[in-house]
Length: 172
Picture (cartoon, rainbow, N blue to C red):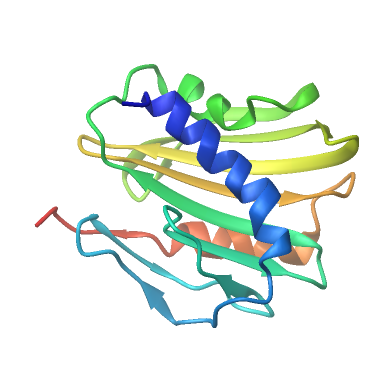
């Protein structure tokens, strides 16, 4: 069985490689929830197209910003490592990685970390902003990425609102 870091590594690369090529699939919904996972989240506002991808809880692509947003929840038993270690695993495989920001925060009354990283992926410059939230039962990962040298201001506003829309509920 793959470890948590293997699953998170795979999810991250699905975010980066599959989402842009799948941007024409799916339609936007207002709220997302999965019966076996303890959350509810609103779709980002603006011109974000929903992508229907297996094993990704919610993913969106914005052609105008040439940026993507993804959200994944892992409720497996393996949540080893501190919040920074868990957050930084999302950047494995990025060459010439430079962490611009990395700090602990509180989101939805839970321990979290945010990181902004620049680097090279497939010979292209990439900028990523990520959040990881950990609680007793799950890890919640959010990622915003663009193949530009800086984060698109309007896209980041949509992403931040998307992250803040996360609501927790008990597992069934």
